[in-house]
Length: 122
Image 1 (spheres, rainbow, N blue to C red):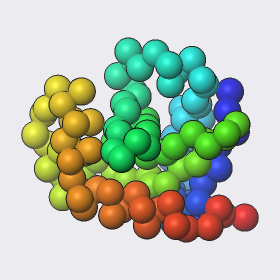
Image 2 (image 1 turned 45 degrees about the vertical axis):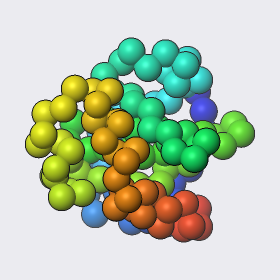
Image 3 (image 1 turned 90 degrees about the vertical axis):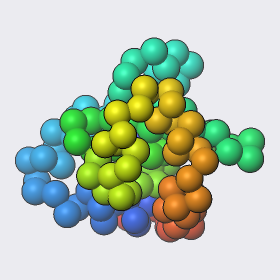
């Protein structure tokens, strides 16, 4: 299991949820190196751009977007499936096609870059 670190943006996003929902989501959000090597599980996806790899984890109606840095997972965004203009999630694209669509979206990468620039939460 990798250590999970939330930045200021992702910590703020998850803190908007009630405590019970936070605990349930965080309990489900476990990431191992094996998970990232074998992405057959529908919960995970991989998005690549400019040689960088970003991962997506699905938990109920929430999506965690993160990258692996050394020995930890840095969570950049935690988004409800009905956000991000809902176009990806309502389009009912196949799993891999959804990741490809995200990789091409400039708005998505702006959200991720904003998360990357945020300091880790304390």
